[in-house]
Length: 203
Image 1 (cartoon, rainbow, N blue to C red):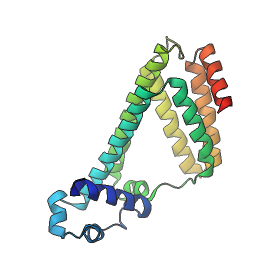
Image 2 (cartoon, rainbow, N blue to C red):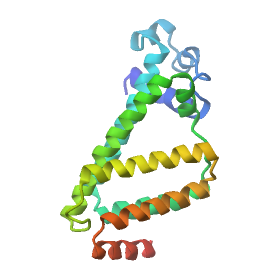
Image 3 (cartoon, helix red, strand yellow):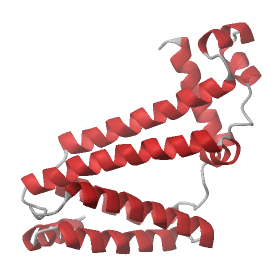
């Protein structure tokens, strides 16, 4: 792996654990036994490194979602999400230090990141919903663009509400499950929803 990619990987891991401001250029140079001059050959500023980290995250997210569309059936994917939602009750409701610092100290980059993530998610859901229609799991008459935007916006609203009212992980999980249940009942065929329930019960 090239030095530049290694720096992005290391800095990303450190910032996710400690926050952006707790990881200095000196820390990175020490880790790789390089001078600051060498660091600045790869990144003009620390902000440029941060932008590379955010871009990498977005690319990885897009790749993971593309894998779901190509390699899993709709029911397999939704069943996996259901299991993940159940496990989320065990997690905390704290923002990762990287995202917390990004929102606090780099508001414009944070907003740009959120817009990019939303575009990626909507694009994924459009493909996913169309796949469900092709598999005759989802109703053929649904507007995939509108439904995809609705899914993403409802999730965003839940995250804003969770932050504002300091919801516990269990409360977030419960509300998310409730919202998902409403949305899925609106797009599934009766036969498709019955098949989904059977798969979830087995899981």
